[in-house]
Picture 1 (cartoon, rainbow, N blue to C red):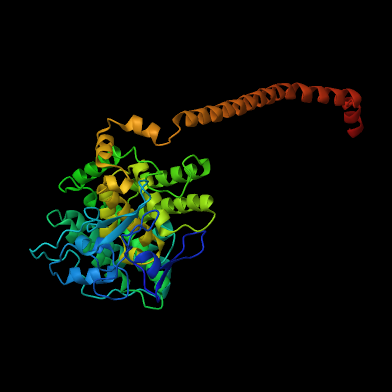
Picture 2 (picture 1 turned 180 degrees about the horizontal axis):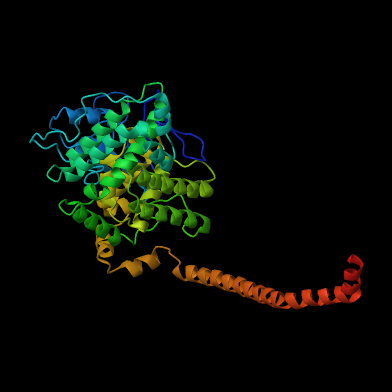
Length: 466
């Protein structure tokens, strides 16, 4: 979620200058005439309460702050994904015309939060009767950027009340097997807010660092209790989305209008790094760590785009590259990871900054993949059906300009070069081995020569000493 400053929203990724995103240019509805556009365009919308922040489809069209307030009021919500409409703009290869995809379900079924249960359930987190007091030195010691240092500070006698509070909450959450996942998410978010009250307003940075550490502590221990449970439908949805991505393995960069060269080795390296980062996201437990890998993947994509275009990348470029990287990676438990982050991550992290921006783009990429149609790729319905069934993939790949033979030849050249370099290293290693074998003999000969030239008269020396 981004605050609105005039008519411009700016965003800068690490290593890049700020990229202004003008609402009248990039964020408004595009005309459906024959004007030519390239890439994908997701239209952000304001919060449903018009609070001045951008809404997120993950929170039913609300911003993070208004979404928490709305859930706490326990009012029935309409389907936010149908409220929060977006547009994905694609330039197909057919006739040079522009096809506009009006997606009502922009992030439908990706991070869909269920409506709050009608049955009232008592809160798992019950604040203690006495207010906890922490000295300034204790607050500063707990506000560590390094998680290991935070754990050391948490073991101090002065921080024992906070440690007890966290342990009790974790235990109650682990034992609560009958409440819904959304209810657990509400309890965790309430716990974050309660912890934040212990820090005064002027210690805003320290409060952010503490909440990050608390989130990592709590969610690392609760991970098995809330992530992709057997009793939920998340596993089936993961398998469905994974199967869908696998069936789209034939999609080429040209279809998605990637601002990259298909045969560029440098760009391919960055894409490969982004694919690795998206795959490694599933191995992390804390929501902030999963977001870190999402941000890392997007930063790799920004570098690949900039290395080709020699200019700052746009939001359209990022989204198209992220869609392609997701298809190449086919990340495990993609649905569950998106759900997990939206439920249990600190809302402030998703409210501002590049992490929330990248996460929204990943949600849009997953939604686009799930609802991909033939017109989105500039194909006829018959071609799309044949490719999805796998009956025409080989013919299509050869007719789409993918020079497979050239790629094989390049790989052979690279292997030959590597073989040559390996042979040189082996020869140098053998020479070094011979030098090591001859070195003791050389040293021994030098010692014998020194003894011959400078003999030691030990008897005369002993007599003189006596």
